[in-house]
Length: 363
Image 1 (cartoon, rainbow, N blue to C red):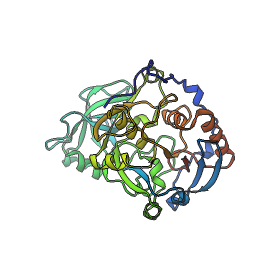
Image 2 (image 1 turned 45 degrees about the vertical axis):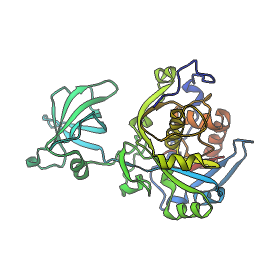
Image 3 (image 1 turned 180 degrees about the vertical axis):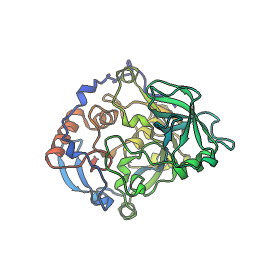
Image 4 (image 1 turned 30 degrees about the horizontal axis):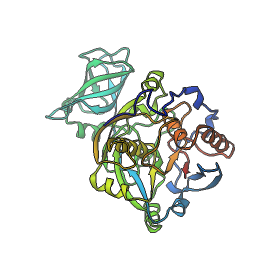
């Protein structure tokens, strides 16, 4: 799947991370989800004139109409965080990111790329016991190769990956969430189906079955795509990525049936930046026109100011971290100054930020 071209691409301007900074009081970072998913607040922002309205997420269907296609990401977060013990008794941890090619077969769990801690102390061939697993199960993680950025290639031994994660894995939460999550399903969307993500597509966390039904009653068709969210979503923008015009790769899929419905839409409303990245990648895969192509594969598309949107007309999204590539994406869609002004207003109005926070609808 072709990435957005590097600098030199018409309209592309290399962003500076400091241009996407804003002040956020720590108490604005939501630590827990609300009791009712769709009780979160919804800021409605007009791209045309910058007008802002303050509503509730359950009001979203009022903004939908016949001819709309609401595109949702049906990925499911893997319980991919493993607590480990070193032979010395010291604690360690592995967050499985994605299997290595041919890495999930056999009685063992195969090879994976993982984010590990303490990365600087772990050595190739070191065996780490899985916390909570009985000794007779033989469930261990072997460090095969230490990589840059706190990552490593590891092998899961003694148990198939699916069983190991089901029995002993934990759902990984973003590092800015310090409070324990009582119900792991609250970090999944109600329509999550295809396991593979290291993080939730958080704009979708606000939906209930009732919200989806109301969207359909308003005349919108609901289409599923898939993008498995990588750990890069937690990381700040890096200058080398921005200079290349490319971002960490994530696997995504748009089926032929989904593409046909999307291409026939009068207005495409993307739920979340993951849906935007998938749709814009699929549009580039169709030759750069204003249609999307059926596709399945890896995308390293970076969307920043200067990007011409080909497939997305409106966006449901959360409030994103300062200096993040997600903030750059929404700034590309609505304009940097307009987005930063709306974020300042959200802070003043007491909105909750990040994964368990409130939402925006940009139209």
